[in-house]
Image (cartoon, rainbow, N blue to C red; front, side):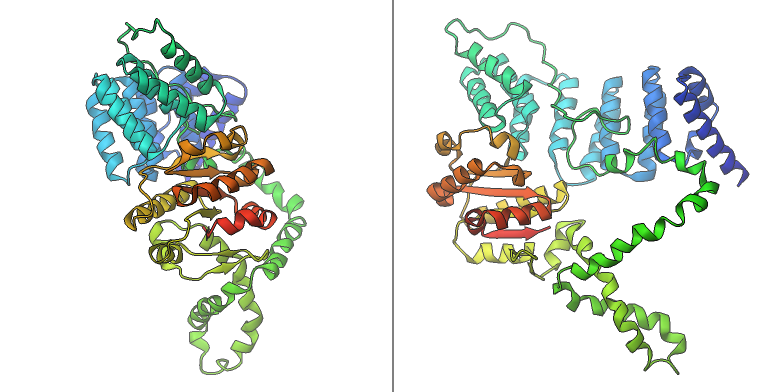
Length: 477
């Protein structure tokens, strides 16, 4: 206890020094500490940030190895690999990349890291182009699409460069990177165009980030990560530790007031999961009552019946947050929301896709981004398998950017594609009308996927029945 208390006290001293802007003193204190004994991940991220500012990258790398040992997080491994690349250790970077590949299926970050390693290793532009073309098939993003266009120009592939710039303008509409793509297109279309003489590979553009990032998050826009959500309240969490003795005096009368609404909410929850829930309570209750079976066995079920409704508030959350596609495939219960919108399970949708030849458009209501994207890719493969669809990639575009596009002018270019519209409830009424008309005109020549928070998606489907009718497969994630 003494050692642990001493470490907690010293970590608090570091935070106090930082609050007073005494960075040198804070680093000197951190140097005297055993980093392996620091219990808080937030503190470790903070120390890594300080070491980077002090240009002591070896210490930052040491901390990231410690964090990875504790979490085995692919996100941490990603950041560690990028740090090693900055330090110029190619052998270590390649070893970490192998670990990253073994840690999970290919993602957008897999191709990003492969590109960065190839570039740092001096690979040819043709090799880099191949990687980015594969990345584009996996997921289309502004910064990497623009990087691909610039490499096309350097290689003298003028037409490919112009087409890539047009694709960027089509899918992303506006923004700093789109403006650069427009300038690049005009330069390539000029009569006196010549391939650039500069053989140096340009640095990738940083993605446009709307909100400032804290030290606990990666400086690169990496999608589908859970850790930043737990790391954001970094400076707020330690503060409650000090005034703990005072909490009972001020907060005891407040706690019942906060908890009561949560007890009321389950009464409004949809009744459909109730059939399954008593099975869970029946399994749990006998385990607790086994020692007393001799006498109260007949009486206890009557007492416990009113309590069977309590688990309802937890069941929907379990359904909304599957950890893998296998979890979703096991669930065959289908759902009708309080607004009367019917939702299918992933297994139910896959079975219908295999049997039906109706136009295939999908709604993903709720769910983490990584799971939604994995489900979308799985369904795309199913459509390919049944011969409905032949496209090999999904193009993502936010509803906000889609609002700035004239869909009527782009129908021919969209034919044969799979379009995922994120934050779909943000679509303007005119955009929804244009989308419905385009879906009717193209028929099975396009697959549309809408994503967003469950309540907002459910409201969107109720507010625009003409859109809801065409989105034949609605999945509650």
